[in-house]
Structures are given as C-alpha cells and as structure tokens.
Amino acid sequence: MQAFLALVDISDESALAWQERALCAQTDPEAFFPEKGGSTREAKRVCQSCEVRAECLEYALANDERFGIWGGLSERERRKLRRRAV
Ligand code: SF4
Image (cartoon, rainbow, N blue to C red; front, side):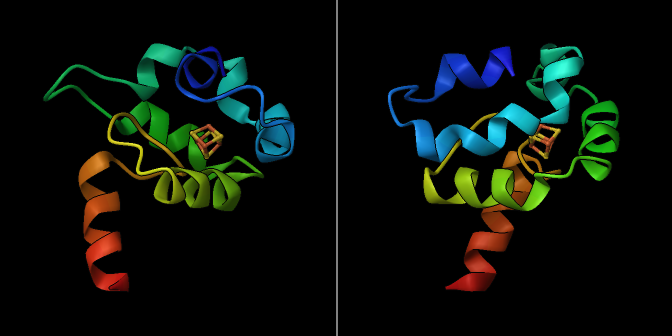
C-alpha cells in the first residue's frame, strides 16, 4: 500500500476506497515494483488472494499505470490486455 500511496492522487478518496483492503499493504511493497528482469512471482501470488484484485486492475488500466504489479498483472501483461480490449 505504501507503494500505491506514492503513486496515486490521495485526494480522490472514493477512487482509493478499495485500497484499504489491499492485501499488498500487509506485505513488502518492493515485491510489487521489482527491478527490470526481477521476479514478479511473489507479488502475483499475493494478488491471487486479494479481495480487491478486480478493482486494483481496473484502476491501473484506467490510470495507465506503467510500473509494477497491479491486480496480479505485470506492466507487459496489462499492455497485452489493453490491446485485446481495443
Ligand atoms: S491485487 Fe495485488 S496489487 Fe492490487 S491491491 Fe491486491 S495485492 Fe495489491
């Protein structure tokens, strides 16, 4: 969650309500923003059990988040998803 707070506009409280239930808030935020080529496995594993995964992914797609794991998907996977949706 700390990682999120650094990236999002915290003035928009309704858009952030789901983040109060973000499972990654209880884990190492660095796992969600690995170095280039670093492992995303641990972050994705956490996302699998997260109850706000759909909201998280939706937020990342809507805000064109370029870095990190959001909703269980990497930046590259989100790009692919976006291309399929067009
Ligand atoms: S889906 Fe993953 S990145 Fe999104 S809030 Fe849940 S744990 Fe965090």
